[in-house]
Amino acid sequence: MSVYDVLMERGFIKQMSHEDEIKELLEKEKITFYIGFDPTADSLHVGHFIALMMMSHMQRAGHRPIVLLGGGTGMVGDPSGKDEMRKMLTPEFIAHNIACFKKQMSRFIDFGEDKAIIVNNADWLLDLNYVQLLREVGVHFTVNRMLAAECFKKRWEKGLTFFEFNYMIMQGYDFWKLHHDHNCIMELGGDDQWSNMLAGVELIRRKDQKPAYCMTCKLLTTSDGRKMGKTEKGALWLDPEKTSPYDFYQYWRNVADSDVENCLSLLTFLPMDEVRRLSALKDAAINEAKKVLAYEVTKLVHGEEAARQAQEATEALFGGNAKDMSNVPAIEITSEDMTAKIIDVLTAAKVFSSKREARQLIAQGGLTVADTVLQDAEACLSADMFDADKSLLIRKGKKKYFRLLVK
Image 1 (cartoon, rainbow, N blue to C red):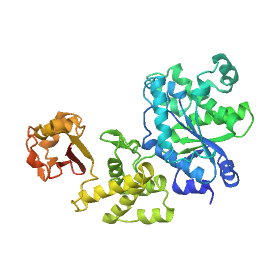
Image 2: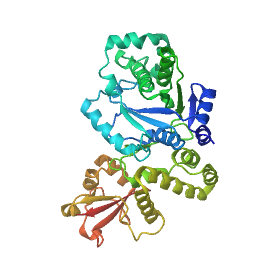
Image 3: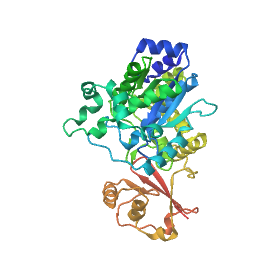
Image 4: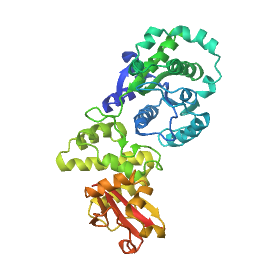
């Protein structure tokens, strides 16, 4: 089975520039391909995860990945799917984010012995001569074709700046540069990048009269079409400091029944026979599939030990084994906090975004301290609430658990 068949069976592939040629190419040859990541934050999020998985499948099949970090394109910002212009990022912010990305990607991609390459498009984009770019590249882009691109359609009413209009040309130039320097012949990426990816394919074919291809993976969405990866605190980050392994595990443990097969197919390396077996479970039995999903995805992103700890914490809280709370997310407080107002401590620890939110949940009976539903929003902590280890279990809503731990 070629990697093309693997990606099709697991549901990755959404669109291809030259379907028959790509299928034959991936069956018969080993190619160099690339995926680009603009460093708009200091961590990758779950939206990037599916692209990393696609890249990993390709590498396992013997193809060589290039990770393109957008130190140059990040200075402009991709207008795709955006209602307004992105915030301009400073070079220092971008450099920091790139360093964070490199560290996280090493969990998914083997960068040893020329098995994969990391490049930064700032190395060529920031020194481009504008007139030279217009003469060598701009002549291969037609404005009417660019205006018809899906990535610009959301911006007609509010206006699309010339600044952003150049992004497609920059991404196309990236592909041409990688083709020229590394014999890269295919670009992969999310389906929202289709128009930008086609630009690179067409630039290489027009400028160099050589074959080039692109292939998109579907975006990670729920069965009803909503983007996955949004939590109460925002994006589901791959950085454990931004989304803890426990919260990460809980997200996948609680996906809808209808999303289990899609997530197992795209976000784990489980054999498809096992994916289909787990996905076919019904009613309460589907929870076993969700446990496997949560463990496997957390293991890939955070490592086996973190996945085990998250699993044990979940079993301790929800499986009736309340003896070991050591792996439940802990919030460290001082001895002075042991007599402070509960909502003050929890708001300071970011359990609540505001005291108003805390009061609303308490009024609804949604905050449990130890085994008691908190009735009074002005109640204070007291030393006798804590156990011998100076730990106190807090439950927010039905499924969010924390430990207050006195240090």
